[in-house]
Length: 323
Image 1 (spheres, helix red, strand yellow):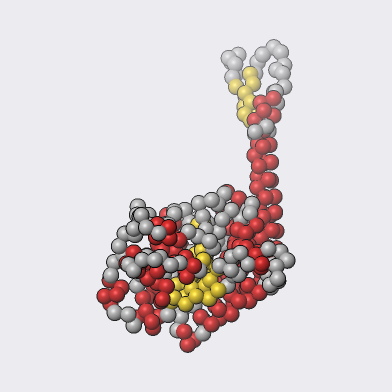
Image 2 (tube, rainbow, N blue to C red):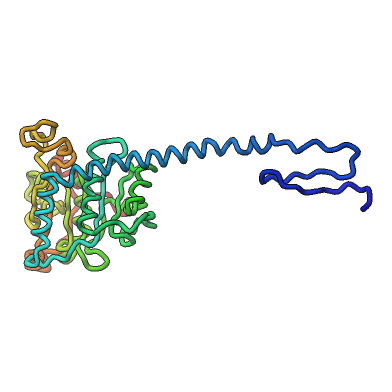
């Protein structure tokens, strides 16, 4: 080979090192500074990954403890009894095939939302069975992709990762409560909406304003009666979906009334601290026979825009326009 310098390629720790051959001096050994410098950025990444794993495990321990506490509680017994009654063959109600959770809150940092997530997981376990593994996000916010999903704009990355690890898909689009029933397989949908705003309930009811859809819905959340209040207007049923739906729905109280002694540890009723997470919570259901007995024109009557300058409760029913 001529005396022209040429390259010899060697591998050193994954780095490619080029050295010349034919020089009079022995080349210095390859420097490792670059290798160490390149490795340095991976240290924070490893620490971040380890921190996320530790955070996920810590959150799992706290949520699992809340699930165990709820499982043996009087609140869970009341809820099971109501669900069993609604599932009785005489009711002719299709079994629950999907659970959609809205407004669970920042359960990674707050106690009440953590109990709400715990109840969602307990409901999934008892109504749908154990999860089949990790659930990825629903593309486009389509809850039909999974029987168990949730949405809250306040979820952080850790909370989203936790929900997915427990088989709960996290919706990617805010539908403002406009979710459909029945489930894709024809079964009932349980909407779990702890302490959501009145507009979300109104949107949900109005979006499903037909007998077959309402009959396949169960809504676990704030009392419809309390949300409707006393509008003080003869025309309230013309603009308020909740007010119009109130006589069509059965309401079974599950949580304790807000402000009662049971909402603090040591209250006279013996209810534990998590009563705060479920005060004024009821399970609502619509009777199929009663819905179908109404004349067709009753369902075709549209909802008028709610007044913007009337009672405070009226203004809460102003529904955002669909995008």
